Length: 320
Figure 1 (cartoon, rainbow, N blue to C red):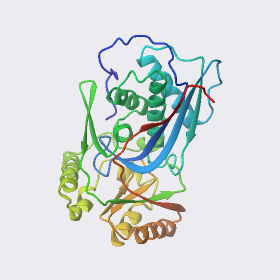
Figure 2: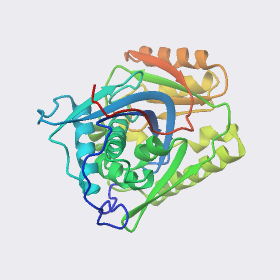
Figure 3: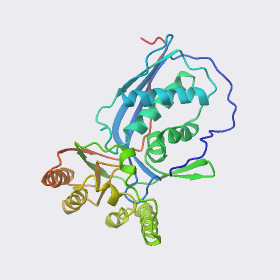
Figure 4: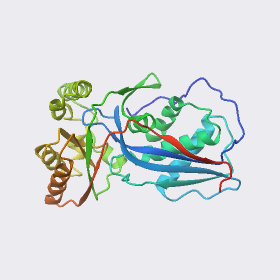
């Protein structure tokens, strides 16, 4: 989903509004895992790993932040003011408390920053835009909508572009799923990993991915854990991205042999996510050992899918 239309968010124009209290808002945003193997740019799943994004309106101009995540938050906040037809404050102060959300590892840190910036700025204006109206803005800033939809709405989201608009639907996940993450020390920025992707696919490869994406949704719906390994196979992006992370297939295999239902490259990588309902520690150790055997240092995280998306957690009218 490289093109998402013009990002129109409902029936413009919006009334121009003045800045309303609060002057500071903090948003809690989940990490996300996109693609889930075959669902390139159209599947995203929220995880129970959280970042907090804060935007504060200031009466005087501030220098643009040098930190890339803070710059993403600021740009998203300014995009919200423009979309709402509201004058931005003279200065915006931004903050990111990332907690356990790894950056540049395919776990949606950039989507969390942008969704947080949009939601915080929206709160500063008294929430003139709905969450649905924030999705095309977030997708336009991200360049694709999979992580953005999951961050905004939580759960497993299916999102597609249709004639300049985005259509999304939450899908059912079985209860009790755990997500075991291998997080290599090696960063893998999305732009860099996307440059390796093929420009064309054979019909056989296209059918391969379409069939498995459909099977994945059916397997989740019916709780058919035995089908998840087949359903998460991919020919579109993982083989190319594996060139940058040669231990990827070894990590997949180690996770499955340790008891995971499946393993896939999370988003653009370099993190690998394995789904299971038990033996999480054993799976995490096996994935770590497989990466280290190929010379890649890594850490592991054990979490779960989150049904909850981004939420406002603090607002202040004083800016104190």
